[in-house]
Length: 250
Ligand code: ADP
Ligand code: MG
Image (tube, rainbow, N blue to C red; front, side):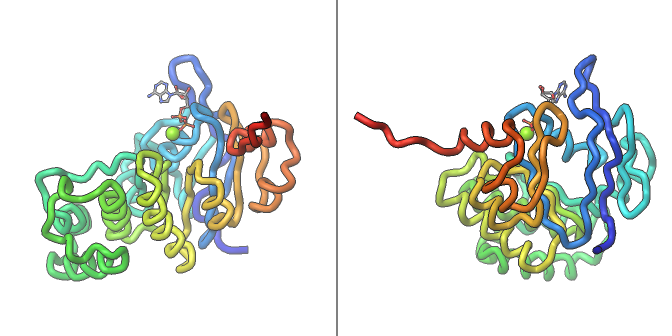
């Protein structure tokens, strides 16, 4: 078995008085692609934010290569650099060019050499087909292009695991495809990833393991075949049914 990269051990996350994650345990192994599915509000984004040390937890523990991730501790900035995250909204800096957006953190946070960081940024942009946009500003790019830049920006930090939170939810269909293709190519290269998505055919193609969460707890997990073709739990079946339609009969 590959090495354990992220280990979540029966965590509880409470907002005010609501338990949003309940006694949830999960391990991400090196090189593994984990896809998380579940209804709106079930805690998917909260889970990713906890992994990234953005949220304090009220019970249990999360470790990265055996080191505890704790929102309040000093190691959080070091660990966050090893965990790349891409959100639904790209959050690029509007007054910086694409290449500046990508090189800013490697140069300022990781103290990398600027020309080396720029060389790498260009290589990453080439891989997602956006080399010619390096001097453009975010407003000059389409949603799909901005989201590909956001992925490149995360990759430029050399993370050991990438977290994707519904990164195509705000995009038009043809842009969804170009962004998912980038993530598929990362999977083929063996990147470790945790992906929250509602794109079920993509989930099936990319996942090593699928996790279905409802009301802050894991209901069921398994291979894509197990979850999509032979779900064991009624709750999983009901959720998956929301993605299919029966032909209207007249
Ligand atoms: P998902 O990403 O699966 O749609 P979230 O993780 O965003 O779900 O939210 C899970 C639950 O936690 C929801 O009930 C949501 O309203 C609640 N929640 C999320 N963020 C906060 C917050 N900052 N304060 C209070 N409640 C929150
Ligand atoms: Mg969410």
